[in-house]
Image (cartoon, rainbow, N blue to C red; front, top):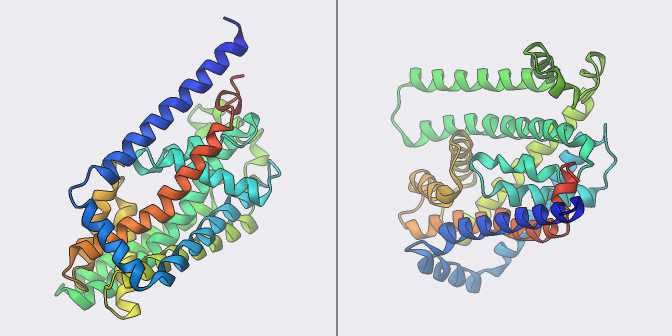
Length: 329
């Protein structure tokens, strides 16, 4: 068997495995649920009453993905020129491969598929930086939201709340330090005897600091904050769409708490939606007794921000030579 034929077989096999895994995960998360019919009925009823909120939420998905695309375009600009459209496709592919793995680890694999093979390791490092920036935004909003939420709905001693607040701020400061000194990670990798891997990201010691400038890091962090505000707004609109009452500040604080908990727990893909729903019920029970309304909001957000982009990303993967993209052709 010649190399070209062997490569084609491996490429097709990889795509088939990915599709089967994707179908299995979606089936377990969407169709293999006892209350799925109730969620669908709740959604259809809400659409008939107020279709504009759901339409606006779907439009906001484009802004959500757009800000993530701008982050990616900014980060890879130092080593590979890419258009906004190509960056957008990369994000979609990353969502597809990330949705089938715990903590979205597959996203690292997906994002290198539209990058030149020689820059694969640089793309992995760029994905890591992007992830840190988004986590900083999530934790920062989450800490302030958690403080407001605990003060408003729970009788907890001030000492415990203050300790939690300062620990959260310390974590944010540490992440910001690591984020703006990301070169330390590469230096540590080199010192640990993994110079060969570090050299795939930067060619020499002097170029480590210039791999990503502070100007780019600032832009990526701003885009991360804007993206966070967009998907927080999406969640808020969906909660209103399904009839959950509450003033903006209390509900927004609850949303930040939900995102903070979700970020803190690496969820297996099969239990992802179920776990998200349980977290949402725990937090939003202060605003509504109807669990179906809460689950419908969480389920709809997952469909809009993850499932729809992931399906589109799957079609993009079909057009990619996976083996060639990974540099094994």
